[in-house]
Length: 306
Length: 105
Image (cartoon, chains in turn yellow, red):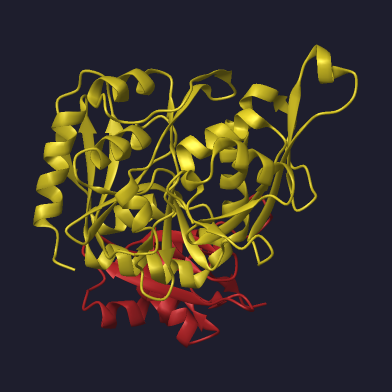
């Protein structure tokens, strides 16, 4: 059963009691919250995700609870609790969804060390995944979201989840967090794209979430071989440029974009080396999405067949 | 002298080893060699001479700087004009500063 098959009321009731366990491959997440509006938001963004047995194992047990005490009425806030621990400060109550997304990022980043975790968006076409590694502000989420509106498979906007055994990249397909100007850019780029409510003045500015296309959710258990590494570099007004990178430079840039390279140790080193050996790396400088798409189409066409 | 009191320049008789528990992994690309320091989990981009020097020290614990220089000349097929002894002295000091090699007491 998919989350979207539950009515809003039914989802709210389940989240308010035992919780709902959803498969967001490669993890299962149990979510509990009495917040009706959060249930609605999760339903609209995660409607295509499978519900799994709540009594079974979940990689993370998350609760989003309204803060208690006198501030409950004066300044309502929400607490993010994972496996009984509250790792973050409370945030305004109406920021529960961004808190859920950030919290889940944090949990994933701190627990999934059987993968090499790259800070990267990932898209795929013709069985060739393209890693888009970058730190915040480079436009990787917008780029990945927009590509998924043009026939590419969306694997992630935040995590390159790389198997240490075979260096394939696994989807962790969750809503893409669009920030500030990117929200309007995506709305203008594709009027049919579903973008959730705008959360103003979060700690990362204005944030809204792009819903992962249904086909990408359906294929969320399919890893893909990596065909190219492209470091996006958005610069307003810039003409598109594709700059090839030497392999050792690309190695250091890719390893430097990993969340857990030092933790994974030598296996991480060998995994990065394996990725770098088998595909080309580029810096993609761009100022608009259509030009970036054309460059990426060309790159993936030239990539070594998987 | 360096900040920790070591001689800035090792002499030709300084002998070298890799620190206890040290282990290297290498990835050799067209434009450089990447070496992984398994003891601390750090990664360095090095040139062929440095990678070869690490390999020599790893394979011959206690080798002196002069011996490293001689072996490098053989393995890399160079003469002393292309790779001066002073260059190797400086290289060993840099590798020591990165914690990749240590002096034998």
